[in-house]
Length: 316
Image (tube, rainbow, N blue to C red; front, side, top):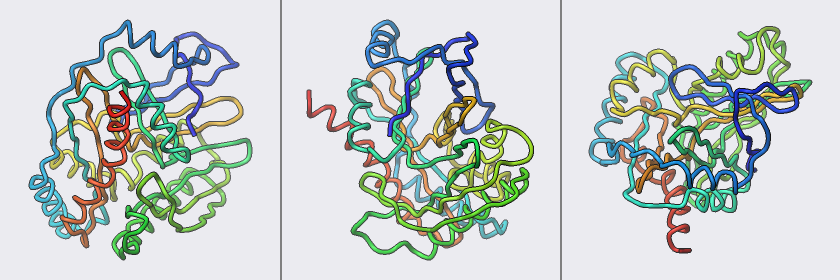
């Protein structure tokens, strides 16, 4: 489900949406779209602009990730926290064609929101299964997404079911605090996202009594699915343990128009640079987490992107 592409400018046009791009930490940036773009315009941009030289720092070492998870489990128990999401960054020394990989993502993940974002010397893309917030004239729609397994693997564990329930309750409380008069939840159920499945609860509410779609998205972000809960304590542990800047990973992107809006969490994503690609994946850690299982979860998530990159290289 690739969303419409737009050229960005500082001009004002009531007929085109406003585009929002938000990092994991920091203020969202809003751009006015000047009109649709196609692959040819993006190709011309890539021909004219060099991609950035990505930081080679990688946190892909297994032993380090196992230590990080064990440390976070100890902190969760000591501080009586519900959940902390720990991610890792893996840098591949590889030269890819970003547009070819983007087309592969579109073909491989028809049920995901496939996206690409380019600005200055930066190029990000991915296929996210997670909606942060969408609106129409009547209501607000979102989801609680947590837990990962292979379709032919064992059932979701009690840890994953508890984790998903915590995410659902947190989002529900946020919407009520924003002034939504009614919040309904449907689920959880398993959905497939490429080679893995997730637990999802679909959430619908009346429009909050205060603010606008940008405000509501900012209030939901970062959800427990990408950060943890309580949010403040989880952010502190992430800063302490991860050792890299998430940048746009686990942030969000989307658009706002007079009729509707849509914001999506930047997951299953990659940052493309000169002969390097940085991949990002994380998992929710609770007091019941097993470090080996958490490592396997990130491996499965990264495999979804590596398979697409491999398809690009084998098709040359």
